[in-house]
Length: 83
Image 1 (cartoon, rainbow, N blue to C red):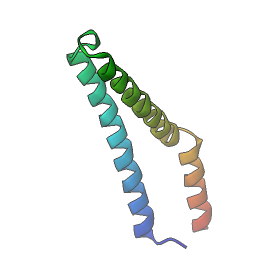
Image 2: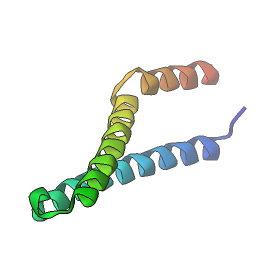
Image 3: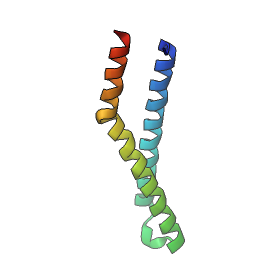
Image 4: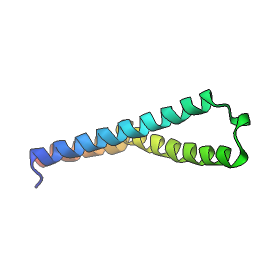
């Protein structure tokens, strides 16, 4: 059985990762808005496309967890464990 500190630590780590993924995604979007893609070399544009794709997938997963069924399932499991 996990103690309360372990559960809180997991929640903080998840929240931290969600913030990092969100901020990273937004920073890349702002960077692309500031530096126009047509001015970039082909290799740089491809690199940014790859990074944006990876960050977008992470962003989707983070929000899918927090607003999807996984968080609700974890909450239900925690409630059942406490009973």
